Image 1 (cartoon, rainbow, N blue to C red):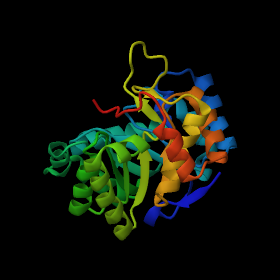
Image 2 (cartoon, rainbow, N blue to C red):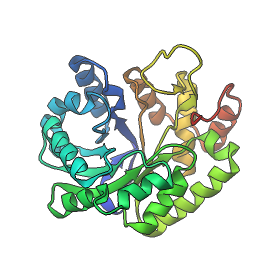
Image 3 (cartoon, one colour):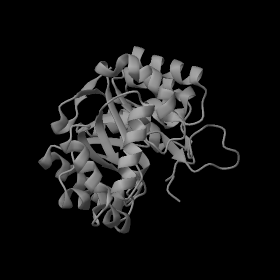
Image 4 (tube, rainbow, N blue to C red):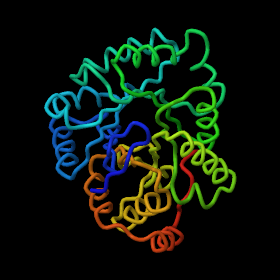
Length: 284
């Protein structure tokens, strides 16, 4: 599996990052098998969150065995310092580790939410404390929606975050001129600062229509060629994107691994995705 430098963090990360949202509601046996599949394929970067149901607990047994061989990231949605600190302590316990490589302020999707993070007594104080005390190596920020690039660029202007996790896929970038402009601004800023960039929702297709048949909150691409095109387009278009967290559904992991191993060139991927039906934003 290809590896890319994770910005100033320096970790040579697998371009597929294990998206542990997939483990929120699965059995321990399913979690163990899914993580083993990812590790065997060369994934060396695990990304989870305290808000992902049982994910941290399900990851713990595997993390304990491979901690020195993986880059471990988790997230907090808490906005007050004391609450974020308590959540970090719980994450450490559940993940069977004494340190987190990357701790991320999670789901910062608009400027009022960003203001909460930076307020006196806000979550950022806990993040800085954790880094200063050596419990956390690096600090990041994440978010969804079309406004995420604007919010994350502003976050970088206010604080020197080490990592950004923001949405990107073919439809968002090619069908929404405002999003494209805002993402390009963020991408340039990240390059200037040598910030680690990972992007989410590469294989998101549309909002669910009817019954949810998979664990994802959006309907993802499920056909192998669609997944191959979606992953190929993001990784081929943006060389500074270090990694793509896999979709929050264990049954799609193998298809993502196969897609990364046999990527299309960007033109072929673009042509394929341009023909996709019912392909739209998931942020409604």
